[in-house]
Length: 162
Image: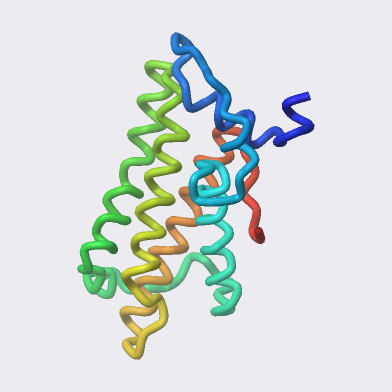
């Protein structure tokens, strides 16, 4: 009945948020919301937003050929924050594999989405500076890959449109 009302992605995410030793109070009203308050919607929206940006910019090859020296152009606080969040992913996976505390996955996904949304609000992806634009495209492409991976590990869909 719950699955029919809110869907598998939401149920799975909400259950993964809590430790197995913790009581779960399922907030049905929150689960039904399509807003930034609903953590599943918020994370999936970040992924869909990146897909939309890349599609609009007609970036077909996500392995952008951006020279490493151009990545040094990423020095805005929001860019650095996003990079720092991205490099945490392997450690999160390793920790979950060791201690089975799966609640770290949805927490990481929410944090990554939040840092991406902050970056998106602070930094224009396309600028007059083609080198900077290329570096930022590479950054959001990397974010897309990591978001997709964390959603896949949790068994949650990564919609390209919302």
